[in-house]
Length: 112
Image 1 (cartoon, rainbow, N blue to C red):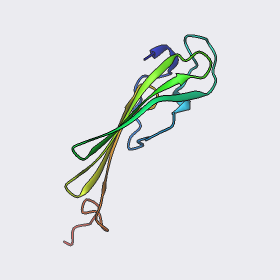
Image 2: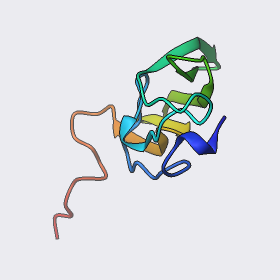
Image 3: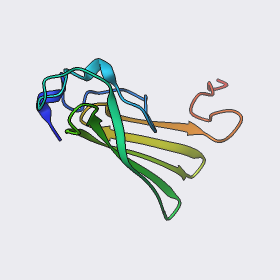
């Protein structure tokens, strides 16, 4: 992974978790070949570990195959929530939880 290729390492992305793709707003350009071109995805792998889906891949420079960052995305269901996390030097860090129920208990207003 290369901190010379990104504006900011592991930017806070709030609850935006990417299962695929790249956050190009944070991409400076390749520190190896000095081009700012497309970022390719390589070595993508998906594994299921006790109900947790883990997706990993590398962000790679289109021109010289320099590895810009390693991306990790996880998805799991815990209690009544779908939980998502993302950790990547290029795309940032984020987490989110969404209720599987029709009405999210965290969003309901108290009656009194």
